[in-house]
Length: 242
Length: 324
Picture 1 (tube, rainbow over the protein chains, first blue to last red):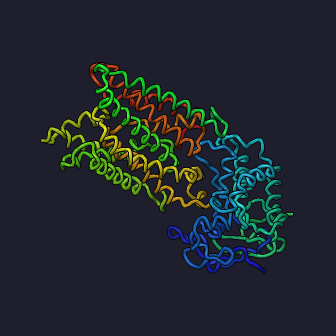
Picture 2 (spheres, each protein chain N blue to C red; picture 1 turned 180 degrees about the vertical axis):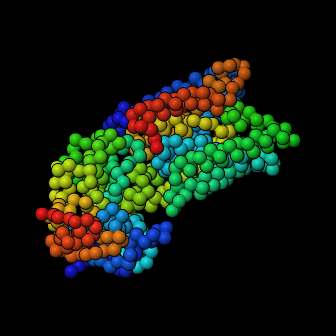
Picture 3 (cartoon, chains in turn cyan, green; picture 1 turned 180 degrees about the horizontal axis):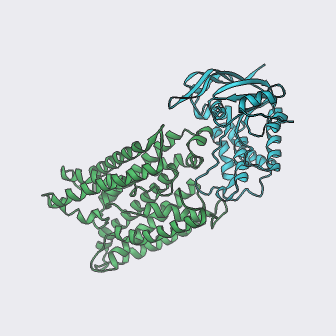
């Protein structure tokens, strides 16, 4: 098994609160890994550590075989793309302009020659032609999410990290999202997604990490980990998923 | 907010049009004035004054673009957040110490003052290495008041008549402009514009917020530091030459953004040219409207800028609920 990313005894403490207790997990290459858990269970902390967006208080985080703390923002952005929960953009840039920012990390490199083509392709594949020239400040929450998703896809990093990308999306949006994640993974990439839509996560993910109170409760194949029993423990209420 | 010129290169037309108006205004300004139009008056009095208006106006507007972009806030303006007052204080202190006024030494002192004010304001607003905008604006208000008070005290109590004569300058005036002053300011503004050009594309991405821009591969602290350094260069020497001119850096990038959209590179180019035009027009008005008396150009820009700014506030409040 090759690893897209690893946490080695990594923990996160902010303002004397333990967001994530020392954790060791491996994200498989070529797989979709879902992170599920209640609000405040440490999902975003785990994702932030994988992204190198948050710095581990202890332990190490590896992207591929590189220590994420030693990588420059540009190197990190070439290795992984992060869609955070913040969809705000100051000033009325068009959807196309925002999507093109996904290419920032490649500026000045040979890959940059294809920037226009890549942006056009992503816009077409994500069905965003109509929104292309509209200011993102005028878009609905779901439309804005789709623009940001297109932006991180245009980044063409092998590891895709999505924090509640499905939250504002309607059925069509979720379908487009799932298709994009699947095709990213079939092309040899990996994805880690946080979602509160657990039945969908079970259908669309290969692996799953269940979190509770800043700890990993279970980690393994989605079908074995996302059980009613495990989820009931994680959420502290009876869970009954068909 | 929909742009008036939505096409990608529409801004080039606008830049061209403003440039033409600018040339016409220069021609007009050369021939208007209290004194008779002789070649002596034109070459040694009006021409350097026009040159100074162009350079300082360009610097002010470009600085506004950089501050608004790097702090992600449309209210950021060098005069509003105390940078200009810091520059004025540096300049007045240098004058008291006998450095003289209007030359290179005065420009350097003002630039140091601007940099000091910038460091204090940004430092006060930092949390986890990221500036918080409301704190920044409010500490800027405090710095502006404090530095402004010191300037006013020094100018009024100084036994040096030369320093006392700066009272007119503190309200913003181009009356003291001469060729050596223009030559002293130009390099500062040029350096500021060159730095601005190198960070323009990265500044666009900063609109995502610090966290997401970093995730996209932008070294946010570096881009912000360069932008604010450019602001110091664009503002410092200009303030030394003409005093504090408010509202230009605030209103011009706003108005231009409404027409061509928020992309930093074209915004920077068009705002720079428009800034030059507006300060020249304002100064031409300031020295001719109440002929033979001259009013401070800072009064003209505030008189026009404040209502325009008020309209922009109302418009933003109506269309997107405000800026917070």
